[in-house]
Image (cartoon, helix red, strand yellow):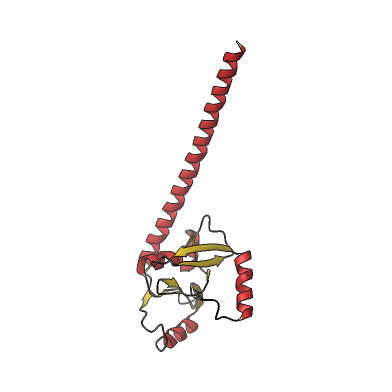
Length: 184
C-alpha cells in the first residue's frame, strides 16, 4: 500500500496531533494527553502565524519526516487522501485547517468511514475545505526529497566525525611534537 511506500522512504504517518485548545476537553482526555506528552516522541511545528503546535508518535523522529508537515507546507488547508488498492479497502486521510493539522486525522481508515466523514463534513464547520487526492507522482517526489535529506544528513555526520578525527590527530601530533622538543 501507499503508506508502506511512505514508511519505506522514512515518511511518518499516524501521529497524534494535539488540538490547539485542550481546556474544553474532559479531565480524562487531559490526563491521557499529559501521559502522551511524557511517553511519546514530540514534534513541534510552527504555523504561518507563528503558533507552535505539537504531534506525538511512539517512533523516534531522528530519521523520520512527518508526511503531514510536507502536505501542509506544500498545499495548505484542505482534506487530503490516498486510496490504497481496492482489495485493501483503506484510505489514508489528512485534514488541515487554519494552517493546523486536525487532531484525529493523519490516519489510515476503512473506505466506508472516510466516505461517511466526507458526507458529514459537507454540513460542518469544515465544509469550505476542498477534498484532494494526492497523486502517486507527488508522493514519489516527497519520498525522493526525504531520501535526499537523509543522505545529506548522513554525509554531514560523516564529515563531522572525520573533522573531529583529523582535529584529534592534529592535536595529538602537536602534543607529541611539543613533548619531544621539551625532552630534548
